[in-house]
Image 1 (cartoon, rainbow, N blue to C red):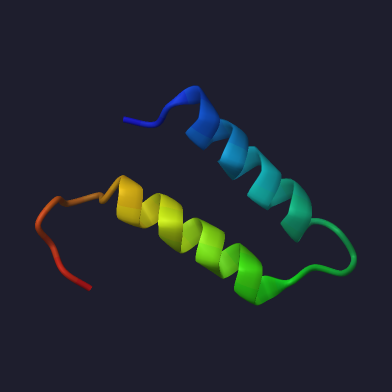
Image 2: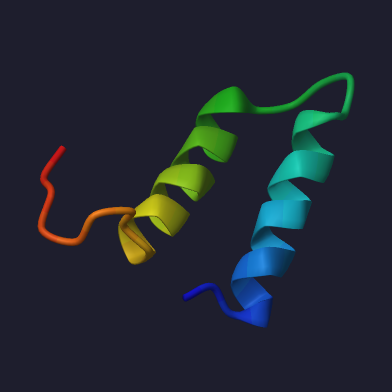
Length: 46
Protein backbone atom coordinates (compact mmCIF):
# COMPACT_ATOMS: atom_id res chain seq x y z
CA UNK A 1 0.00 0.00 0.00
CA UNK A 2 2.99 2.36 -0.22
CA UNK A 3 2.58 5.42 -2.39
CA UNK A 4 5.33 7.07 -4.41
CA UNK A 5 5.75 9.53 -1.54
CA UNK A 6 6.17 6.67 0.94
CA UNK A 7 8.91 5.11 -1.22
CA UNK A 8 10.61 8.50 -1.47
CA UNK A 9 10.50 8.73 2.34
CA UNK A 10 12.09 5.27 2.64
CA UNK A 11 14.84 6.28 0.22
CA UNK A 12 15.47 9.50 2.13
CA UNK A 13 15.65 7.68 5.48
CA UNK A 14 18.19 5.24 4.01
CA UNK A 15 20.24 8.10 2.53
CA UNK A 16 20.24 9.93 5.87
CA UNK A 17 21.26 6.77 7.74
CA UNK A 18 24.27 6.33 5.44
CA UNK A 19 25.66 9.76 6.26
CA UNK A 20 28.64 9.85 8.65
CA UNK A 21 26.60 11.82 11.18
CA UNK A 22 22.86 11.31 11.53
CA UNK A 23 20.11 11.75 14.11
CA UNK A 24 19.08 8.22 15.00
CA UNK A 25 16.06 9.34 17.04
CA UNK A 26 14.72 11.44 14.15
CA UNK A 27 15.15 8.53 11.74
CA UNK A 28 13.45 6.19 14.21
CA UNK A 29 10.49 8.57 14.39
CA UNK A 30 10.22 8.68 10.60
CA UNK A 31 10.33 4.88 10.32
CA UNK A 32 7.75 4.55 13.10
CA UNK A 33 5.45 6.97 11.27
CA UNK A 34 5.69 4.87 8.10
CA UNK A 35 5.10 1.64 10.03
CA UNK A 36 2.07 3.17 11.76
CA UNK A 37 0.70 4.34 8.40
CA UNK A 38 1.15 0.89 6.83
CA UNK A 39 0.93 -1.82 9.50
CA UNK A 40 2.13 -5.29 8.50
CA UNK A 41 -0.81 -6.83 10.32
CA UNK A 42 -3.72 -4.41 10.72
CA UNK A 43 -5.23 -4.63 14.17
CA UNK A 44 -2.02 -5.85 15.80
CA UNK A 45 -1.06 -3.52 18.61
CA UNK A 46 2.47 -2.69 19.72
